[in-house]
Amino acid sequence: MSNRTSAVCAQKENTMFSVSKSKILVVGAGGIGCEILKNLALSGIQDIEIIDLDTIDVSNLNRQFLFRKEHVGKSKAVVARESILSFNSNISIKAYHDSIFNQEYGINFFKRFNLVLNALDNRAARNHVNRMCLAADVALIESGTAGYSGQVELIKKGLTQCYECQPKPQQRTFPGCTIRNTPSEPVHCIVWAKHLFNQLFGEEDPDQDVSPDTEDPELKKDGVFSETESGDVKRKSTRQWAQEVDYDAEKLFNKFFKDDINYLLSMENLWKSRKSPVPLSWNEAVKCVNNVSEEEEASKSLEMQILSISKCAKIFEETVTILKSDLSNKKFLVWDKDDKPGMDFVTACANIRAHIFSIPQKSRFAVKSIAGNIIPAIATANALIAGVVVLYAFRVLQNEFEKCPTIYLRQKSVHSKVLMAADNNVQTPNPSCYVCSTKPVVNVFVNVNKMSVSEFENEILKNTLNMVAPDAMLDGKGIVVISSEEGETQVNNDKKLSDVGIVDGSILKVDDFLQNYELTVNINHYEAKDKEDPPFKFIANPADLKTKQEGDGIKNGISVNTSTAVEKQQIYNKEDDDDLVICPNDNDDFKASSSKRRKLNPVDEDDDIMVVEDVVE
Image (cartoon, rainbow, N blue to C red; front, side):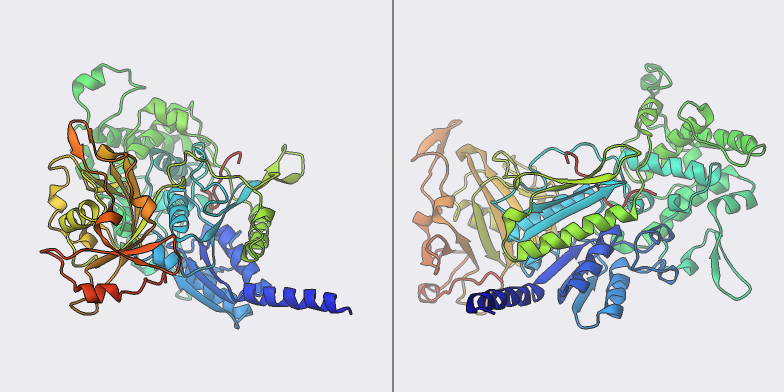
């Protein structure tokens, strides 16, 4: 072997060794997530972390091959870790049974990883991870499937377009756990109501279970569990239970809209960042005050009306009686949007569930137009997409970004083969994208447990960053914490930053309209070690701290001083000349010795459509 060949081989070995030592985060442990984890473990990656809030349901077992029947009710992330270790015990793998939205998984959490792999099943979580990775400057590989279709794309700050660069079509597939546990849109409630129809009257399908995911069968109090002679817990089908209670409308109503909701409330992790549902009993529903005025109802046709909850409850009772009678002569009923009892049943159930979860209700006409076919999840599509994800992971870890164009998996027709195609080039960022377009970024280091919102506004945004009337919003959450409108956020003034959700890793979008001055502010929790340490500090490019107005001027009748924070503050150079560490000047509220500040060291920074993975089955 020649010296050159030996050198090339040695270089490849060194590259693969460094790749195997890379730290990778997998977000989601469902159909695609299980395949990705298996591929990573068998490919030699030695440091993996997984996060997933979901628990294992029976309907997952046909395609999530790391799980078995005995795992039903347990954490997906935890069981996935145990399964991986069972065939490769030499890797480090850590599992989080938690929501990626929780505040402890902020920018600094993402900075720990060399690469993030998304295997998620909803758009909100995708948007959140997209923004976290952009802020942390960590490459993200996004993936998803729907039936025989799928997609893989690389998201790298400044190089490729991000997940939110292009508008997405309305989501047509929905994760089962969202339908059962955490609906957030009217369509989720409509799909749930269609599944309820099938469980009670239609062709039964275990993949269309409407009851909450079960962590422990013994906790269920609704009577759908029984014990076998051997003492094992055996779950009855929804149909069996309904037949035992003779389709009593009041009992059915209380189970689906009160007991199941109470059980969901016992799963506290679900409601850390969501509004909790409010259980509704039959007696409360029939007496519920009309949420629509009589004049409004009378002004619209029955098809266009949004009915009150009391009317929905009465329709529920009437349709259950009719459908029970129809079922007596048949093996099962087939739901059809043109069948009045079935359509009325779905409309009533969807609106009652929407009311419970504080989701806007819909008219019968709207429900009828939304209700459609659900695309199933296909195990082979998941496997194909997961294979491409891990192939791209190795390319990204070797900085071969140009070899990662977006991949599309498509089936041309029912009878044709599945085809996989790729874009010719990596898609460049959309210059007008709100999320990833070039905007000034400032890293602020502050004690989020001690500084109040008013102090942050006055000392940091106004005095240091020289804003006049800032508006600050928590990125990705839509929560305005500081408003230039008088009195709008006054209630926040005396609260600590952490009390309003500004924590380590938070991202603030700050806009001073008067000066045409926008900043993205990354929050880093910082605790002064002694009394002489500054109360807060920055890492920023001086050019980013200038407003878009030239010189002093007047806008909207208000005098605007556009001298920058750099001109007003003590500045300390980092090794990188482009960035500077900025500390506050001495003032009455925050005092730090100038000698100490001079010694301050820089802070080390520790588808044509987009489809989703875990659809309603």
